[in-house]
Image 1 (cartoon, rainbow over the protein chains, first blue to last red):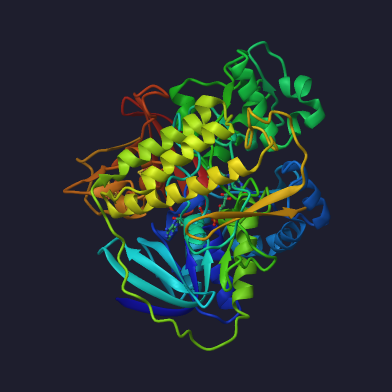
Image 2: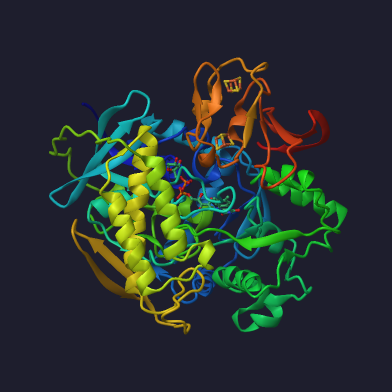
Length: 518
Length: 97
Ligand SMILES: Cc1cc2nc3c(=O)[nH]c(=O)nc-3n(C[C@H](O)[C@H](O)[C@H](O)COP(=O)(O)OP(=O)(O)OC[C@H]3O[C@@H](n4cnc5c(N)ncnc54)[C@H](O)[C@@H]3O)c2cc1C
Ligand code: SF4
Ligand code: SF4
């Protein structure tokens, strides 16, 4: 088995991972990036992005950002993490600008910075190529080596030649994004299917703590294309209307903040309109001028190009035929909820020298690109402080086992089970104790199968099952409805305002929970 | 979903290598081996040096006669909408300073 030694092993060459390699080099340590696809276009930023959210504008107080995310998280947000993160965002964006990213210095919403971001990922890849000692592409991280309570490296499956290699490191950073593809989707997925929750699964299997997994992320999206709506809703102040022409956010959800209610409520409201028969639901674009229309389409070309094809093929003219809105299937992602691997202020997990950043890490309910960049920086900085020379760990010979039960069949069953018993789109996101327990037993059964097929697909399926299991345990443990529809129970229907984040640990056989009060 | 034009394809394998979701595989020609893993992100289309890949909406979403082609011109990206193979609209965006 080939062994590569470095100071910092970075799992995932995405937003947080590329930025971490930059900061590692700046702090004088070596890093190796392990990426399952190709860094030039991988992860959430592959199609581009038109605004960096979670950006601290000149003169804006970090405390205001914390108040903003706390509101968005309906009271649940970790202050230490939010403050340390937001402070790093101007520094991160400046680096991207130096490498060629066109930054417009215009606000999009309160903490958004408009950019021409179609090329943000190729630019991040340039940064990583200049910074990392080595970038291993088409390589799937499948196990973290923990020795004497400390992370000592990563086992990697090389998808090109189906070999295992070991990256030995003083510190390991999980930057592999969130989990897509757990639930059945009704159309093209919103979150990248490549982000299969691997980082969560690696952390769980290593015995690291996980937080907030009961809060799934269910974004309201443009129906059918699953495009983000923020740019239209926030950028052009377009309200939501139902089939009666009622601006229901204003009439029915005023107590939560109307059109600018927390994201969960902006998903709950349209799903209620559907359930109660007042659909289709639209985002009212009638007032958008011709000039603004061109601007809007260009913003989409920077971020979700399929939108351009969609409006042509469907003959959508903003003035006459508005865009339909519907919440999509649930995801687990630290980008928009507190779900993720538990980290301390230095972005170290509960396992020494194991770090997490970006969508993989929990605790801040609105993190986005700004937060992922910032957390990559903070983690690399802490990793550079680790003293000691070399690691004594001797890697074992390891090869993932492949059987002959089709990964595809297992995946289909998992997605159906979660959809139907664990609050998927077909159940309007509701679950109860009994239904979640049915889902657990089905997932446990799927975990016992020996999956086979293309290696990357098998490894992804195992990772998704691990994530699904922990998500369900969290959903069962929180005996209340705390954030509909992200976490919404029919057996405890009243809206609670409890002030804890649920933290779990899996020791290989059982789950233990603690509560972090915020 | 994406559609290939094998008359234009030069088998350079760039689409297979760039796909963030590892959805494309090369046999003699590239193919979308895992359609359900396709994110519709257009990375392959932007990367193809010979305009051999186009984006089409999945049939449940819309009219199959419309397609999109994207060309990477280094500092600019050109997006073109085709109807029955003929260009009907075009937009350009700046991508680098
Ligand atoms: C469609 C969409 C639109 C968005 N719009 C905006 C917006 O307008 N503004 C904004 O600020 N934020 C936006 N976000 C959120 C933002 O893009 C993400 O929060 C952020 O980019 C996440 O960064 P990350 O580093 O955690 O993950 P990513 O950038 O996704 O990186 C994860 C990387 O890990 C790799 N990986 C996964 N598994 C493995 C493995 N097993 N081994 C090796 N590598 C692996 C992946 O290939 C990927 O490269 C959007 C997200 C999406 C999906
Ligand atoms: S559109 Fe994106 S996800 Fe689909 S095949 Fe092309 S590169 Fe892969
Ligand atoms: S990138 Fe284009 S030319 Fe190259 S193999 Fe793919 S389809 Fe063919």
